[in-house]
Length: 515
Image (cartoon, rainbow, N blue to C red; front, side):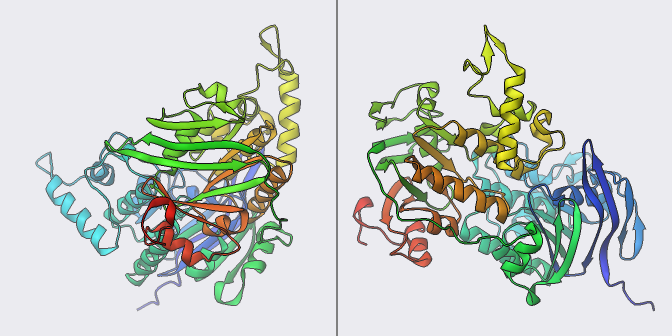
């Protein structure tokens, strides 16, 4: 009997081109059975493109894919599924108005005489969810559940199809620290059961914790493959960016001045249930400081930002910005004093079918600089866009005229940050500003936020990344079940104490209960 091939999947000399850009340039990737193989690289390095080739979403110009040593042709995702390859995409492919259960079984329905056997499907999904610790409400509509829950739905969708090769594209970009730990455990359990995992990430901690081997890409080219046991975070970040990267935020002590944002007893309604998602929340943010609201996803942070930015109307309390009461002011009025980096870049950050340059002037096109007698001054817009693209290293195939939808997630994020920081407003509300970004881009954005603070701006940061919360903020406010339960000084606290507040196990005087 012949020996089983060493590699379950091989992608040999893959080249994939798009207009103006070689996304994958002669890349080879080999996945062993039952291993977790990480794919590491900067935003726009070609990681998602390579995985989309494996999943049949793109056809390569050159190269070959083999499964268990045999060449295979993957023309579309159905071919990939037939070969046992499943993928959880960075931006989830779920239907908002369907229930969780319907999304999981869609396209792989169990039928009998043409009738849908939902009872059997529900049983299979429940068994999978218990077996892998993926707790979800099968009857909730996708539009009503948190992003962390949507992530679980995507994983269950893959497991429901009995896939043996699992591709995770930035799976932790939207998860809380606790959910990330759970996912890491789930991934390890999956490989114990004989599944093989390709894991795209820029988070070095996670790669070191969970991956057996790492393949590094840079600007569409293969840099190398290393065993995680024989490397460290600094070496990986150097391979990925091509230069030494500062992994710790370097900043002086804050010098807080006047109050820019004052929130008093604010209540904001919930979209999910009758009670308020935010109740009686009060805090100040001063010029020259970064105040971070930390918490596990789904504890009212999103609704708090909606209330501040005008996307939701508060049911009680008041908001004042630069001394003006804006509680019931229009979004336009708020944006006169506020820059907003939203949580969902696709829904609230960009118009995906507009070009990059159009997106960069979305809130400014009526300024005299960009229009004359009601007509857009395209030359001025182009010049401004080129300047921001250069300054923030926004990578795109066709520069300012690239359609936003075709850019990588990290570069879309950089474009939003460039636009919002450049608007030069007294308050910056940054929600998950480094979500889905690589170490080089994170380093750059952290420096930008610190520079804004040092220039006398007030920065309100909402983040689920504990490292980011601890290293970037001057004050930490912890939110639990819609209330502020603690105010912590990052210099005086630890990650585990912060975790206790986030889980509701500890409170200070703010939210009632004993510290």
